[in-house]
Length: 430
Image: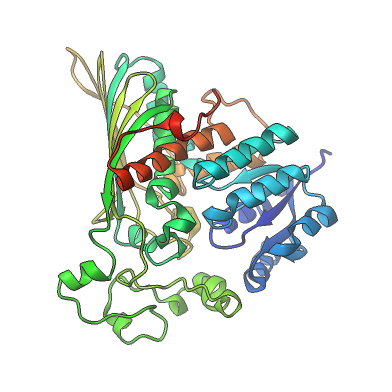
């Protein structure tokens, strides 16, 4: 019988349960969890209660300043990093130095300096970093890759990519730690890393130059005041004003969020239910980006965080035609319900319009589950028996850097009004 791969977790908030639930259930034959690490004991205790309920059993817990001790005591093969974005690099680098491979949530990190630290650690240690870009694995996104690779529209010359975050999922970024750009890099890093990675993957190229504009035009106190709002609150818990706000998140009514955050806040003072119309928001909610790629293609990109529907449209123009994709996803709040439904499909279509031929609908493989069905395929790739992937969807630290550099350059462009050349920020190895 093959030896199970041993995993330790650092960060036990909402996203971690996606991974530990899979290991404890579908992949218990190949994988096991040996330890949990977090800044908050209450959250680790909750994770252990879930592992026990799933039949895995509780594992040792370590506070964050005992990370090295966790590695020494429990000897994991790999560390799964699901902390807040600004600390990803800290744990990635240290895990590599202590002899472990790393699986990290996106974004890999939030700026060029942290990227360089990760590159240096990979080079020094010879260990590997895997970035979990689940959207690559969604069948409709894989189909787009397949069509473009086959030359269905010739050489791609331009891309128009529009992503909508609705007033449930989109608003949630403005309640949480993401609202501070120092934590998340803003949505052009935290969220758009998915989208910029998809374009890199679809076109098999890297960004060359970036120009962007963005602003906070919907959320935040100033925008609410412009609309005549007079009642404000800092957080929903205990607020009478929040009871009348459709944007308020009531943690006490959602068992998972209550256990992870409301019951845990006495340890660290982190409030998961902040008002989206409060002060202290330093990220944009309306963003537009123009990117030129190394292969000559150009992309216009838009991200709106207060749309009435969730999903995206991406259209490719090429020397032999046009490919049009629309995906509508079901609404959700992170960890506010069944995780298998987060970003699940409401409807989707791919329309191929060859030059001088009638357009035709492209059949898409049926899929179930979160993020367009991509989560289940990603989990199999991470924790299942190894198989060859003809689409080469596994993403390395190089891919992780290439995706966030578009967002990092976009942030700098917004701040300066200038076109940024990506290599001037960080040269990513081929």
